[in-house]
Image (cartoon, rainbow, N blue to C red):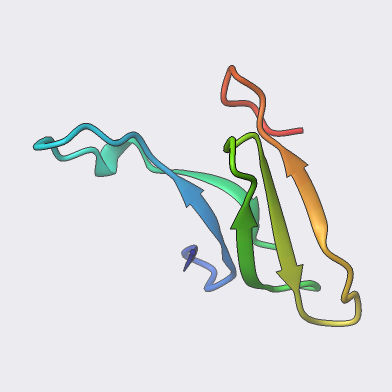
Length: 73
């Protein structure tokens, strides 16, 4: 979890290849909402879902499913 250039917290994903620098593959995955800032997150054991705990006026977890193509829905 990290903040974007607007200082909004959220979760990024990037490729992992041992011994190689992959920072250029980093991309936003979930969060980054100014009205409901991300406080923490958890991944499902199979990596297909992410749950965010958010602050602000809304305190409900938000579920985002990651598709095999890497798209977020």
